[in-house]
Length: 377
Image (tube, rainbow, N blue to C red; front, top):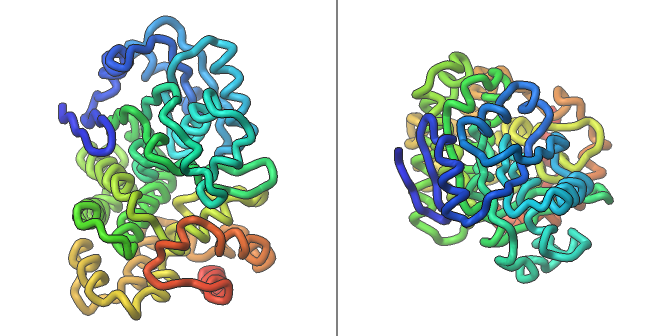
């Protein structure tokens, strides 16, 4: 068992779920609310984690997490937390339950409205450490939310905003690659490309943070070597382990900020219809943004290509297009059911998204119009 302390406490190993009860005791809590989704309940993963983790009693379960977490679901889970006299949260799932759990913990002790805590609305300093502990247990290898300082929540008015603070980082991350063995190929690919995008965008961010850069490059190297194996042979525990580490490393570098890919995918993720998977959006949008950012990033692009095992003369954008194709992911936003009217409706949200500020090349509204058009084709 490898115990890692970087930003937060991390238990990383096959079978790591067995440490949950011990981690609850270390946090001096005993009545957690399980935050998850209906799919994981039906798959038996929630029952498995409760039993294997040695969770005390019969913990209450909130399984109403939508595909993209919402303000309404956050308040609903917050009310269950209070009604059941809970003192902590165990978040189980992909990025949506993990992000929802962070919002629930915030709302337990911080007054409404939720919007006041969004980073672009000046909410960072309003988020304090006065929150119930959160243990994050990812069941996908992609979002890095288990060590991330942000929760992405769609508000009741349709805006998808980031709630960002060091106090939002879960107290403990339990990273057990065995929990991802049953992940279907398309979801494995989509969440894996989320990790790839995190590593690339955080590395390209202009903020100065060499340790984070090193972690991002190592995470990208692992993902490039194992994402195809994990997708095409989901029972390969080595590939699953390496992808979970790549996802974790992508999350460890979030403090550098992301970029235009995430500004665009955050905005589109706020659409009520069609409902879109975040990792798939990132995969489809990434090639266009790489072409846009290329002119001023020669040295960093060489490092990215080296990490991916590519020749120095390779076209990084074209290689991502090929990787998406190999993984069976959509080729364009239009293939995901989007039209120009969808992207036009979300243009202002894209420009104002917090991730846009750390894109290595400043992007205007006109730039984002062109990027959406390229990703649509």
